[in-house]
Length: 299
Image (cartoon, rainbow, N blue to C red; front, side, top):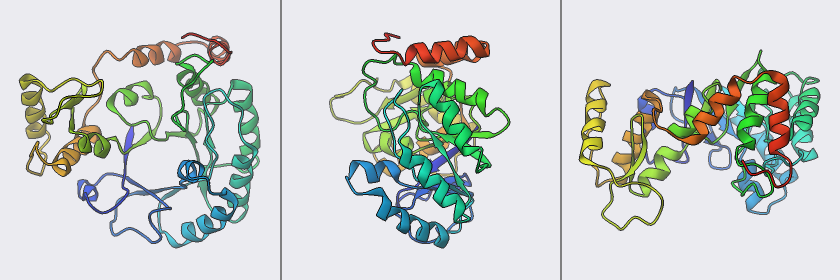
């Protein structure tokens, strides 16, 4: 699986790691100063939460997409909560961008199975080279539906576009990499977010707190054994920088390295659920996804 690191600015030189990078067109108006494989996100979620109309932004997006030299461009979309039907504008934006000769990646959110079928029929009229799954945006609670519905719908989508590449948007922790292991690629900014909040990512396990403050969220404080394991990993994989736990930028660079050079070995329940769904036959998988999208589903 390809891991693509989100780059909101130039504070951290993650491009020096030689990995694929993703920028947001709301923050970048020209080609970035690196030679890495580059993806451009539309900023659809940010546009939604800031309350600005997307139609005026579409004109600006077209201008920016044409001015940024990149490898992949994500279509403008309107995020929906899990198990909600698609918003018509998401399809309209893709159609308009496609007909303007922009090679964009259409986004499929965690729609109920019958709506996944319909949007794929629509996209087939304007064949993309790959699809993106946005099952966890916006980060709203899935009230009234099963908590594992986005995972089931991911597997249903993966089966439905088995001949195409599938990218998962914004689900790039080590545990989520395990959940979405059948995707071709994912993007993540968690390496940076965790570091800012005093965390490092331990290979195979996940984030651990290394800061001096009292922990106010559900994350374990790092143990000496885990620190030793992290240092061994960095030595074996020839991490090219110094490691200073007290500096968030140093933690962020380490986190980026771990995410792009390791995999998850923990016991996160979602990984086990995902593995089980991967082995379901097509009929049972569709029924499971539909069931989890029904109101008051509990698992």
